[in-house]
Length: 259
Image (cartoon, rainbow, N blue to C red):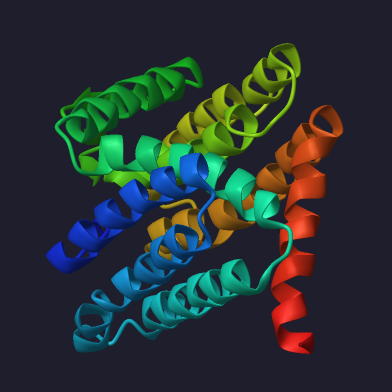
């Protein structure tokens, strides 16, 4: 049993990487056109994945791809219309760091090292709770069944987001490091607990024949959402600059609808 490996069309990868370069240019030049082009191309990049999800009748991810296109295109237009360019420059700064961290693991051999490390550590936690879990590569075995971990099982999306948000925002170094420590390591550890829980639930059929689905897609996602909300709240308390930046960005984007 395994969750689905994230799918990325080669066109998405190429255009997203180009967008990352343009974001860096925007951060250092503060030129509106560079900002517009970076966010617009990043939005278009997500559309490359739509045919795949339509072909496998995954309408949820199809919606997510279209939603990403709309949001990032909206941001690109807001960049051209804003009179507060620094808001978008600061947003691009932490977004660039977050995207770079994610790409570092998503599209390099580090992906396999991370997955393998998470499998071993999750199995270790499982053994601490009395389950005879054994990790081999990216597989965790228990009671004759196994779960195969994929990149999403490492929590790298949330880790990359909070790395960018905490270390990329303008604030003094001590508070940025503190915000990083109450978010990224906590997310990593909670994710290990989640993986161990899913493996035990599936192997021992805690929730019947749909144990994997219930543990992975229902219980874990609900708990993860609650945990991320609490972590974000803690980060905002430490870095009010980040909260102010997000509200300012939303306000600038909404202005494009009012004008």
